[in-house]
Length: 168
Image (tube, rainbow, N blue to C red; front, top):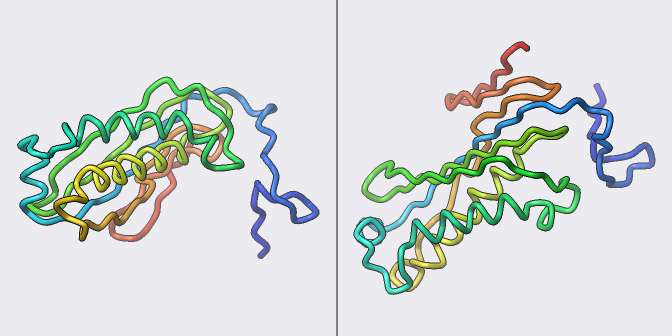
């Protein structure tokens, strides 16, 4: 079985996919990632005790900006008029912070890359703002959690390792 990549043309060259013939549909993507740090670092973030300012507020804005600028960062992504970008942070443990991004658009192509970019840049911003007290932080497990809409239908990551596609 030969796998066909949509961003590779018949000559094997990278190209931007023509989405002009696709129907408009509501599309949503959710991505997440984890920052692992010292307990004192997470405490300082929660208590707003870092010299650079409100870490999560700045990281939230950075994540939103990353989603909006995704096409400038990833060469074959289409520029999208996003209708919603939401960045959330949750404490998974005394040393782990999850970053979660939800992106929405009514368009002809999905928003998975925008959600993944948002998580990545929000996590990098947390790292940047906290590196003076904890250079050992680890950014990991950046992944697509779910996507809805479009021709391929809905998809949700099964955290046990099996991916599922919901019928349309």
